[in-house]
Length: 210
Ligand code: PRT
Ligand code: ZN
Image (cartoon, rainbow, N blue to C red; front, top):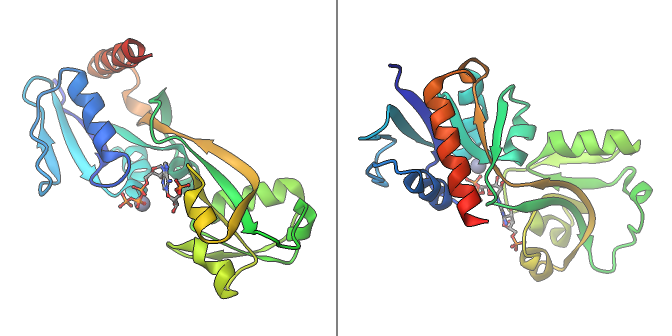
């Protein structure tokens, strides 16, 4: 019997809920913060703890068979993976936001404007579909401070409560993509019986909750 590998986020917003759902499936494993890999005692499964950005490609390349990650990261990395199950946590919306009082009022006003983001692929696709040409500035974090510092005219980022936008003098301008955590799989493992068993357990945990 092949030991499967599932990749989950090591630390961050999806870690706790990812561990919780696996534990609720009856899987027994130690969740040591310092280790990068945990062996499940009662199922042929190993858990890899990774940066979320690496998970889609690890699953695509078969280094991990399964993964739990936000849809936004899968789309951004353009990884070729199977979507197996939406998991109902990590919900957020990727939005374009502008300063309150900005002269940018309609989508066309973004033509020629600088937009700061950590998600250039998703933003580029959206703008191309709308026929808009902006100057996409890719930065790795804290994009919300851009407009206030005069670094960009708008931002494109993840929003959940909207509190971060507000406290940086920004307001939502356009919704681009909804996202939540999903279970993904490598294309070659879809018919694997252990995967089917795990998927069934995950689905019963989810339906017991709803
Ligand atoms: O270290 P690693 O690379 O693994 O983690 P990370 O820092 O890249 O990601 P992390 O842990 O912040 O987020 C993991 C995933 O959670 C994201 O890819 C999304 O799918 C999902 N998610 C859900 C969020 C949020 N909600 C969220 N609010 N990811 C980020 N945020 C940030 C956002 O970037 C902004 O700075 O929270 C801020 C906005 O929150 P509000 O509530 O003020 O609107
Ligand atoms: Zn990340």
